[in-house]
Amino acid sequence: MKKYNISVEATLEVIGGKWKSVILCHLTHGKKRTSDLKRSMPAITQKMLTQQLRELEEDGIINRIVYQQVPPRVEYELSEYGWSLKPVLDSLCAWGEQHIVKEYGDKTAVLEDNGLNDLS
Image: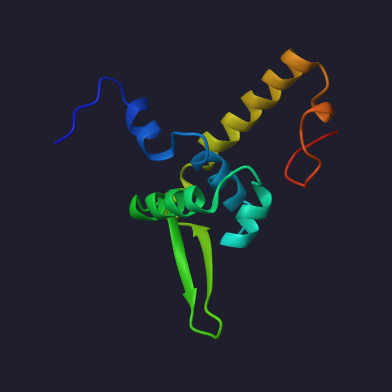
């Protein structure tokens, strides 16, 4: 059995790193195909996206839905357990927004106008 010094380590083990929280934030807006996620995160490589999705699925945070059609279609969504992270993700977003304002003054200068950010 693994031992943690502080419980936040367990959280970061599941959602830590550069991309997992970003993927999860996108999935709070609904089901997404891999191509949708890749388009929303142009800096991530396909290999890294696939790896992160697999890890999130293994941890029970997201569901992978395979539609039996030709060509096959796969979508990802937050699992019920994954939805329990929404308050954490919302807090991370809110803190990030405050940090951007503190550092740059104007969030519209550094946040993408992609429908995911409140630029008002």
